[in-house]
Length: 227
Image (cartoon, rainbow, N blue to C red; front, top):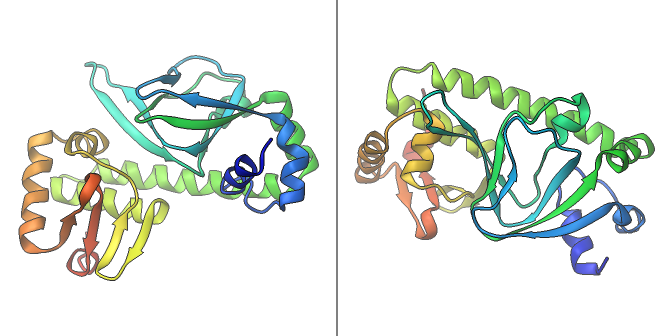
């Protein structure tokens, strides 16, 4: 495995505590795969025997509602991973995963995954920490979906994304994930029209700024309000 791929693996949150030497020793366990845009990686209710680590690009984790609507549960970006739940409990995948753009992933088998956890306490401990964070995020999402006011739902979503996908800017905080109005609607259980109306109101009041490539900056006025 070349040095560039090793550098990408180093950015994976599950592996970032390992040294370059340790990463090179375990690199044999990974298979690198390129994904096309809109490629189905995991299908809901399938049983997978591998885990995926996102080296570059972006993927969405979705479920289909009883009436056929797509619900976005999460956005997976470079540095994140998915598919570990089925490896651990042996049950089917709780959601589908689809690439939203050309992406590069590192794939590890179930056997090698458990081998790494057994040999490297730092990976095991980091996995437990990340799973606790994801559990708390799930609680926050349940709380968000119980909110009656649409603006409160969107604000809760944005503040939640601040913890997992953000970058600082002089004027505020930029959500480091590309979101269309439909994406936000799918993540909050609202209609696209409602999302558009609320975002336009926040733009006019200066609470948020829509940047190039659909990035959203949360300005100080937004961050200082409570829900």
